[in-house]
Length: 287
Image (cartoon, rainbow, N blue to C red; front, side, top):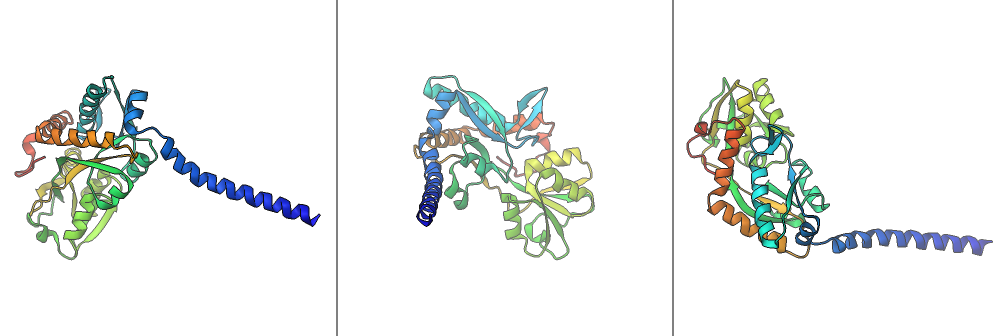
């Protein structure tokens, strides 16, 4: 009887070990067996782009149609990839968030996301390309607050600064403003609301997100691209697929998009469609 028990235990242990090994091996095989991003796009006829919903002028809906410069850039890339592979490919939008975008790319839910600052940490997790465009960081002051135009003017004890958690803008602000009190939120809308409600003196974030928030909230005061100007290059990310053709084509496309001026043009078109006055761009703001 004891021999039978031991055998059963051994079999159970062996089964559990095999299952665990299969899980690890299966994970490896999922990545190995998954088609390359290049082949997958050709096979499905679709390129999936990660989008943050209702984030004008990046991506939004106008007259029932998806618009915004992320969408326009997605269409531009997909049209050129279609020419390259000799097959008409379609754009598919996949909702995501700043907090989840890297995981969504790794899980093969998304093929491409545009609008990520290239960092060494992100490069460990996904392939990155770019730059696609530059995005100045600005301060969005409450109506009663305007300390100056330099980062140092804002770096004083007692000043409250709202930021988007996990963003490059937050990292830049924390690096340059060491004496202030930070208040972190998940979205630009929450950050702007924090300022107009009087809980923060200013918000520090990307210029266009802030302009969109200020458009809907006239209680925002001055918009100041802080000096020395910080305009991080924004690139994009895609899955590490062991093949590399998709990443290589994205990189070539990104260089052409920026150097040709198409990126800046698509941004300005999207600003206009989102109701943002391009004439109100602060001096020195370039994309």
